[in-house]
Image (cartoon, rainbow, N blue to C red):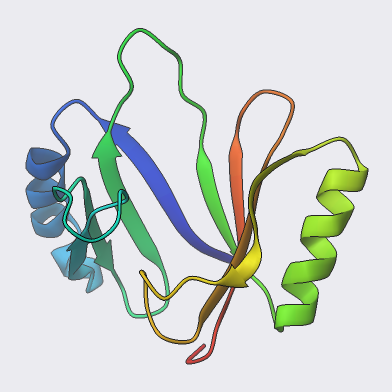
Length: 129
């Protein structure tokens, strides 16, 4: 199951306000804002959700083509670990070893890897899901 998607935007805050309005009939609403740089850095990611799924908007990178960032839900932390190991064994690149991600939420456990084209994948187990 797809858990969340990141979308690059030239003005992510503006795009966020647009999507909150546009997707309101589908019961999507503002979910939160955070800084991918960690505590004490500027907000650079805006999210909306429908309860189980989320879309996150962030600035695009200048002068480069960006792929997708796809979050995929796992049934257990063991499944997160196994998927990460399989991805690396298949030739993928490490983009974040398996472990807790308390900067996102308590009970958030994930691993990240990239494919041959730089597409980013996050395998995530959320304690509340």
